[in-house]
Image (cartoon, rainbow over all chains, first blue to last red; front, side, top):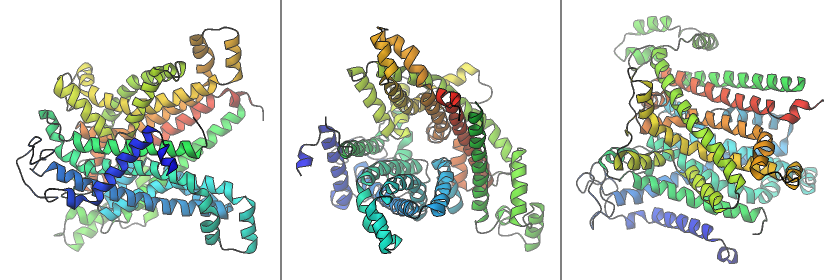
Length: 271
Length: 319
């Protein structure tokens, strides 16, 4: 709590943005004045008392769509990042603890996946399997877990040579136990900061895919998709597509600000 | 010099192996699909006999490893098969679009690389000043923005408010070079914003890193002007990381064009890839995906080789 009070302004702004978004995502049905997919007005109406942010390309309330969009987009990105961390850190710890051929094989596979542009890889998988939410989550989680693997392997490598891990190995503890009880608690701080960064990446990635029309499918509200749907408005001087786009930008900046602060504390620097 | 050569040869070998594995992944991915091309093309009304005959014609009756070999050798010779969506040869679809994408990438790098390098040097020169802080925070926010956000802001300002540039970049073969450049200036500017941020931050970091070393301090003590120190002492020595980041960003550019092309309806390879994914036109996806990864991997390879060559420590080391 004391730490929170002494955090710099930038980190406070970042936390404010995150908390605000999470609250909106959780209480979406309470906040939203209309139904998620309900057509309530004319096409691209401007801001008014009935429609706080105007209406979208087929006359749905944009404010409602934004609120539900927060829920869908953030929940999906969070779930994907979480999965990617489970894959990445389990494999990374395993490579570090087992060493030798396990490490060699895992590292080479990861190298190959990482040498392939992520967006292209995702597009190819989606073209083969079709775009559905489970496919989306698993594809992005697996592609993203490569970076988590690199980090957690590097961190765990440093821990795995310490005496208490050696002692646990000599006691005959199983690999899984060593990973969970000895490595994980010591590797946590850098992994938490990485979680923020990975979340940003995944969030932007899902938004981009939705923007390309290959992510979350309509009529579900989602910020990237909403930019795509309303893109035509911009040439008429209507700024509707900028609203969801700036929501994406603001949340990413917010998370980045908090991660910066966290890295600053973790590195032990004082200003 | 000899060990640099060994390193380069090793690095090339690794890239070649990666390309092979990726081509295998692409091939297997398509193999895993339920049904095959013959059924998809002929539709459900086709008799089993026609499907069989067509399969023979497409050599689908052969075992997978032989077909993989045939597919790969076809690909190397520029024969990418035919599109499922409109029956035209894929190479015909891709050729023009690939040149458009490369044109956009080249135009962007002509703007972005000098801009990023000079901004980076200036920020390192005046570090911790107001200028440095403004530049750093602007580029930092560009990194966290999605590409389409930057694109639509630029459209809103430059094309809707001031009507300077067209908001759609539709080009055709009959346009003159100048007209083409005018048409694609907006997507090029968008991409510039995205890559300049990365390149500028790396340049700044690399130069500041070198500025901390002893010979720079020596030069300062000798009373050499700061600009001369940066141009003559710091910049050549930070060239290796800078070249590396430029090439890596070029690689990013080739892939990053996908979204920008969709925003501006630019007829490039990225747009074709996205359309084909939506239509599940697999031969086109296969070919354009493999081309994208080839370009990406070779630019990354170039980045590594160039930074090896420009690193004086590697050049002169004996062992």
